[in-house]
View 1 (cartoon, helix red, strand yellow):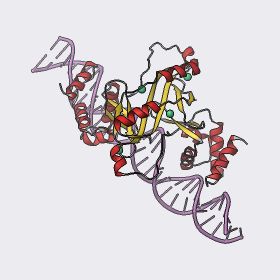
View 2 (cartoon, chains in turn red, green, cyan, orange; view 1 turned 135 degrees about the vertical axis):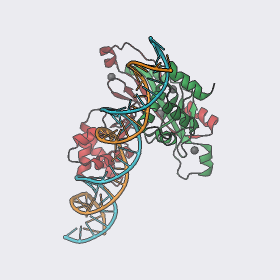
View 3 (cartoon, rainbow over the protein chains, first blue to last red; view 1 turned 90 degrees about the vertical axis):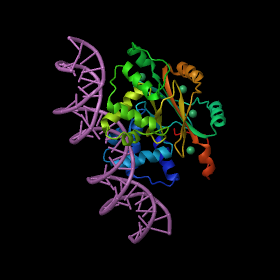
View 4 (cartoon, rainbow over the protein chains, first blue to last red; view 1 turned 60 degrees about the vertical axis):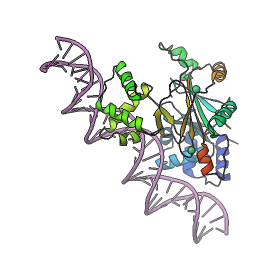
Length: 150
Length: 150
DNA sequence: TCCGACATGAGACTAAGTATCAGTTAGAAT
DNA sequence: ATTCTAACTGATACTTAGTCTCATGTCGGA
Ligand SMILES: [Zn+2]
Ligand SMILES: [Zn+2]
Ligand SMILES: [Zn+2]
Ligand SMILES: [Zn+2]
């Protein structure tokens, strides 16, 4: 059973209709590069209305078919979702995205729960860096090390 | 030396002018609640133009006077920056934000560096939950546990 | 084959941020 | 104090990302 068919099945099981527009959106994003914006999908899924593409992307997020990658500038990219909980490692120079599932936050959650009285429900982690291919092609004079935007 | 004066000094040291508009923006955000949007500042800093408020907020981010808090819906909030590297714990129901400096990613960085050949340069972590006051006032029937949006 | 809920596309609308540009001003040099 | 100019400003037009509305179309069950 192909990726497309699996997704279509998932749609049906959840009581959503399998329409022409949704198929065209799915075709578009299965053919797209590893990560893409809603706008990419809009251009590839020709004939499908703007609102419908946004609606479908939201639906696919709810169904865990795609997941959101937050770029450092705040813009949203998407990619076909890996199964289960995972995070992203984003290359700052070419935008390439890798998934990783390593996620040990239990100690942090313990600590925060007891020190703040919050009930921790979720978290969101993105890691930024430079992939090997970008590093070799653009050696980069001014190196920045281990910092984040906050 | 007050907070305001310190920030003004920092502006000067970096070669930026201390103008009336910048003072008014600073007044506005020092008087604002712990976290706020650009729009909040716009409304409080009366008479300061839209573009100038955006420009000033960007400048203050560069100077580490304010830092950005990413809400789960993608909207940007700001808060007066704590010194140094830290992350945010955001209450999903009232939006309250706490800083925390606990950040042990060295193991993760090691692991990712060797398994992906990326040079890790930064990361971004936000934790979401419910603060004690929201939990007691709205006991919440459907509990969700330890998940994130990906 | 009928029907109603679901889905759609066009386009108006909103929110958030940027670009342009003529006019103003901080603050340094004289 | 006066002059000078790069930095700064507000108004406003524009862009981008996403939502809302609504009349029309269609999926799929009865
Ligand atoms: Zn790269
Ligand atoms: Zn995680
Ligand atoms: Zn709360
Ligand atoms: Zn950290």
